[in-house]
Image (tube, rainbow, N blue to C red; front, side, top):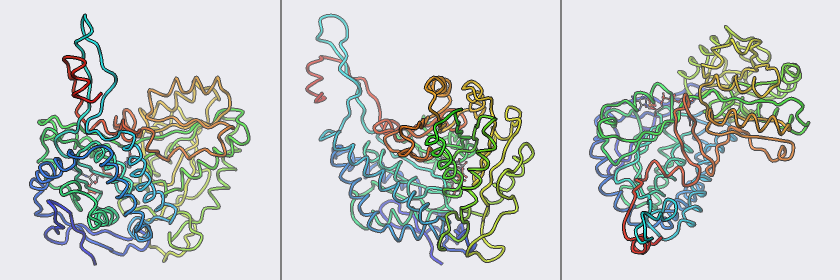
Length: 516
Ligand code: NAP
């Protein structure tokens, strides 16, 4: 079995001992091991700060963008191998693995394009020059420059390719070296991507490092000038945010955590809008076996349409073949780990205290190409809460699997919004409808509770992307329970890694010095 290694201080290093075991979630066979025992994270962070930082800060935005484009091409060049790893270690169907890997290369390419527009400069102007006082000579300009430390990723298991790329794209373009720690259970994919990039000789020394295995004492070594980007559960997020070294050094932490995302069907939606809604809900439940932070967990449907939705969505879900992600025709694979399976089963049990099953079976359905009793499988499950305002668990518990709950509501924007808000801050709420007054009211009522709102009406129904798809040009993150973070969104996502500085003085001189 292969031993995964970390890339630290410019060398591939194996930790002591066996470390953690990674599995194939379809067969439960062990596929790799990863240990960080005994690795010197303090020295690795210092190397990234002292060698990678200056190397990157010497480059212009346009030059950093060239690095991102080269990374994207090198990774894409080994796409088939990466899709295979997604199947073997993450239980991904080909479509699910493409979502992760192509999402990674696409995001890097998007930021490479953005870099061109930022041009041959090293600092970013933040807004226009500001006149100060009388006479017009004294003025000021806000600028954004790279933080002088290192960007530390701590990522979740479900997007080992995209999770690395979406963070690294913003950090490298901002001019900050990266130390990335993927979740151990699916770290093989991330290790392979880092290996591809390092072997291609694309990046200057010290710019990209990898921790493959447990975090150990990594966070004890953070210092001012660093930034942390975390994706994972709220509990781990809290531990990281309140780590003594993080608090002491005032290190900013971006948290992308759990979310009870919602979708609202508006009464009297056009047929095209309704069809787009059914298609998207099917995708949200089954894509990556529901292991997406942005997946819809709560579906608000006007009470008089609930039976139609159960029938139409149930029929579509029923056509989804579940099993070995490499087998012909299979559209949904297993959950990624044994822990995820037991946590999803426990969560479904808790949801069932306040809901009923309207499609699927808790015992699971037929599996294609899977040895009996093997694999971390959960069948797609559609639940319904008849009294949605009292169904506390539905608004409070994220089951990270192919499970969503229908919530009948009275058909008003106010009732739908009251239910959505029970999620206490979400990554995304999507709304399918054609009633403009309703749509306007819903956006106004929900924007403060969401990082993103996706509105689909009949005019864009045939082009609409599923709401769970995160695009680099739009913000990803959400308030409250979702962690309060912001990633991507073009240059917005670079903000965490930049120091904003207000420069005041002789206005015309500053314009020259800052090349404004
Ligand atoms: P997790 O258990 O919180 O782990 C996330 C990461 O934190 C892993 O890399 C883990 O490393 C690391 N970690 C755990 N304890 C740590 C500590 N004390 N110090 C430093 N690092 C530590 O979450 P998960 O099970 O991987 O992911 C599932 C959750 O992530 C779900 O709740 C989902 O909603 C959320 N998620 C959110 C988003 C988003 O963008 N908002 C995206 C994806 C997932 P090890 O693997 O080595 O333990």
